[in-house]
Structure formats: C-alpha cells, structure tokens
Length: 618
Image 1 (cartoon, rainbow, N blue to C red):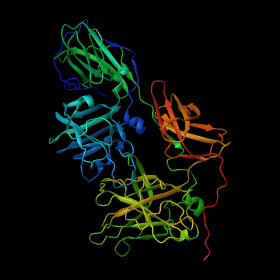
Image 2 (cartoon, rainbow, N blue to C red; image 1 turned 90 degrees about the horizontal axis):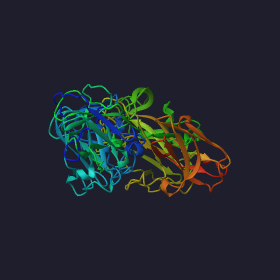
Image 3 (cartoon, rainbow, N blue to C red; image 1 turned 135 degrees about the vertical axis):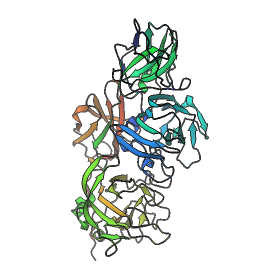
C-alpha cells in the first residue's frame, strides 16, 4: 500500500520526485506509541464491511446500471482489492447509494444508513490516477432527487498512487444548499471531469477526527527544508507516498484533521485515518529525489474488527412455511414448486418454463458456480404497458393450507435476470402480492428494486419483514390495502411473486423463496448464537435489547472469545414474552465495534404453537 498525498493548504499535499542528497547523520524519529487504533470508520461500523474494494458492493449499484446518473466509467473491474476503471466525461461512484422514495426501503442505502456528517467528517482515500485531475464529492440530505444536491470544493489529484486526507467541513462546498453536516443520505465521489483517465482505488475511509490518533515525526541532520513520505513495505521501490512537502527544519506542522499544538520541530499527521497497516515515515531534502532517511520503527494502524451473525440468521428461523406446512420447500427444484404462473411467453413462441442450471454470482461478485433455478421468459406487454410476469407458489394449495402471517413474516427471495444492466425506469422492479382468505383482491407492495449487471447472471437476494410497512409499503394503487394480517377468515390463501416489469420478452430466473418465522427462545431453555468475524483475537459480548439503540440500555447475555464463533445461552431468563433484538460488541484490545442481528427474536415462555393451517371443507 502506498500512502498519503494531500494538496492544498492544510487539506492535501501532492508528491513530486526530485534529486539525491547526502544523508550522513540524518535521522527520522517516530514519536508516540507505535500502535495506533483505527479512527471510527463509517463503512466498517455501519455495514461491518469497510470500503476496501474487496467486493463489488463496496460501491452503490448505479455503477452497474443504465439509469441516471450514469457512472461514466468503462473497463470496470474489482481484482485483488483494487477497483479499476477508465473515466469518461463525468465519472462518479456512490459511496452511499441514494434511497428511492418510490420504492421499498431495502439495501445499503442512505434511507437505511444515513451518515452523521458532524461525526464522520474526514475522508481518506488511496487512489491512482494516470494523470492530474480535479475531483469533488457530492451529497444530498434525503435522496438524489430532493433538490439538495451539493458539491465540495475541488480536491486536486495528481498522477500516480497517492493517499489524500481531507477534512470535509474545512474543505467546504462550492455549490448547493447544504454544507457537510447533519444527516447525509447520498454521497458520491467524482474523480475527474471531462478528461479520459485510468483510475484505481485501493480503499476509502470516512472517519471521525480524534487527535489522540495523531502521531508526530521529527528529524535531525537536515540543513534545510524536507519532504516527508509514507511507506508500507520498508523498501524504496516507488510506492512511497508524499505526506508533506517543503517542511522547515524548525517547523511544527500538522496534516489535515490533526491540528495539534506543541513546541519543537516536527510534523503531526492523522495516522488513525489510514487503512490498517504498517507505515514508516521517510524524509529527504525538499525538492530532491535521492535516497530516503528511514526510521528504525513503523506505526502500526489497527483494523477495526467486524462481525456478522449467522445465528440468528438474516433469513429468520428454520421454521419455513413451505417446508413445515406444505411439506416441500419453495426451492425451485421442480416446476411443481409453483402452483400457477401468468404473463409468461409459452410454446410455440418461447421455450416453456424449466428447472435449469445457470452459472451465477452474488451481488458482491463471488462466483456461485452452477446453480439450479426456475427459468422462464416473460410475455411481451401490450404497447404502453409494463410487463407483468407472475409466479404463485401458493395458489390452489392455499385453499387448504393458509399462511399464518403473525407467525411467518421474514421473506427471502433469490432471483434475477441474466446479462442486463440494472434499469429501474424500464423494469428492474419486483413486487410481492397476497390475498387474505375470504377476500377478493390482492394486496400489492411498492417497487422492490433488484440488481443485475451486464455479462453475468447476478443472483440477487432480497430479505425483508413482510409486516414492516415502513420498509415495505403497499402500492397506492393496490386493489387491497390490507397489510400482512390474517384478514376476516384468518390466514393468507394466495401468495405471489412478480419477478420484473420489463415490457419485452425477458428471461428471468428464481432460485428459491423462503417465508420464515422469527427465532423462538424459551425461558429456561438454551440457544446457540453463532458469528463470523474479521479477526480471531479478542472478545464478543452479547446483549439483548428492546430496541435497536444500544445507548438506551441493553441487558447482558454473556461473552466468548471471538475465535469461538459461538456462545451457548443457558437457562434463558424469564422475561415478558415479546420481540427482543440481539446486540454484539466485538473488541480486540484497541478497537471495538457493535452490530445487531438482522431480525428480532421472540424471548419468553412460549405458549403452544397453534397450527396455522385452516382446513376448509367444500
């Protein structure tokens, strides 16, 4: 990793190569502890997934779409932790993708995960440009269409690998009504304008400012001003990155975000803003390109530990309606998993629906190899209408076996369309619909935006709580406005999935549908929590909570070494029967991080589970 580059007073300094100098009796000393905790990084804490370019989902999905704003990037790749592309007229990538006010509130968007811009105000980015460029950031208060679009002042990027450190509040804005502050729900990075360049990004961090994480380098033996560099591999090989230029031998200087006062020569810089790694601070006479003077030590910047629950699962419990009540999961291993379908293109015009293998990958870009799916082609829509393919996994069977919506509410669907850029305006929209027993009309949800991209078959995964109207609104024009509730005769007897709204004959695929209950934890019983973590050292502390706000109070469950990957909760306490949220704090001695399980669990003494099936005699 090459580090640091900043250019402009107190905001960023750019690197230049110069001539050699005699280094006899010259030294560099690194002050303060060599161990540096990480600053609090937005992506690592909010998503448990830093913007380290290891996954395609480190950027928003507009990168893979044909809706405005177009990314204006070609030759896009993610390889070995590096994002690469070629820029066009106005390239941009979403660091935090905008939510859509007309769609279900799903995914890693600002609608779900706003940035506290008063806390997260410092941007660090390691980027390689094939030539100099002027970059900006743009942001919105609520979403991309709320008329608050604002842009920062210019960040000048130089050719080559550089690490830029920018205090966004000090940088200021050049256009738009809102400065960096308050809650921000859409954030884009624009690396250049109107110039074709090759770009590579290693990592991006949006962090708080903590002067305790500043470190000071001092030097001796130089007769005049010096240039300072950062190096991560202890070898002079061109990977060195400018930290500061033309520092007076008597100066007490500071990098952006590190305004530390003090006496004596030296240079303070915000080490905690850097990506995890080992950093030496190098020096040589200002304006020269000779050998560096190296310190004998390096700063070690810690990685914020991250974790995610595997139990409780993001998909709810193993109590799945189709498996438990119909005796056959909706896993699409047979055409009979779908009771009825409508709006499909059928023989002789098209091939019939089939169970077939496809080569697929996750939205993050991980190959899934060959995957068996239900595959079909939608019928072309009438002129002026959207397409409307419909799959009903519960139709005729619902007359005898109904869904208990109070029990089964966590829905997971894996599906997609092959080899197509996401296009929300033209049809990258799915919907869920259902009918309460005894009713006539279906309730139809608002748009569910799904992801696809050119060249591959992305198996997108949608998980949601069918009972949460704030996340999954009902379409205003839905024939029925009855929510996910039993209805007059009890239960839901029709359940439907509409996979897209493209108007043409479009191939689509469906891997599975799971409709699950919440996990049930009985008082006096046991439950095993399980997790995966980014590192094996440290401790995981578990809590239960009545909401998803740890500052309002949590109740301890227990703790275990992170490496254990699990914790058995014995003799679950007697608490009022209800929904509780499971919270975990992972610590490694330097940094801590907290996260909630995706869904609440039911804790308390459970009454006998009443059969949800209502047998109807005709």
